[in-house]
Amino acid sequence: MTTKRPTTAVTEVPPAAPAEALEHFSSLLRFETDCWDVHEAMAGGSPDFVLLDVRGPEAYAAEHVPGAVNLPHGRIVERNLAAYPDDTVFVVYCAGPHCNAADKAAVRLSRLGRPVKKMIGGIEGWRDEGFAFEGAAAS
Image (tube, rainbow, N blue to C red):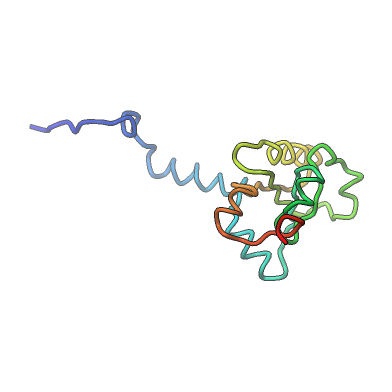
């Protein structure tokens, strides 16, 4: 006789089949990257992307990820991207999980036909990793 194991809120809905999980999580990596991977790429000196801080100029001036370019999400228009080749990969970030400016920026870049990924965690994720900042507050 088979005994049914008790379930919790975690397992009440069974996990996806491994093949479905592989497809789902592999797909996520096409849309996002994390602070650690961005840090490693930036530290290497030749990142294959442009890191955009999409917060306002005041927040950027206070502190930002070293090497990031400030372009607030509302100012992402073709004119402001003209200096970048069409195939430039942009990685966008904002304040953190409580902020959707990076998502808004990703939408704008996508509408312009530009490749984009979001750095999950944003400024707060960068801080959680213990990485250094540039800007007035970082001094």
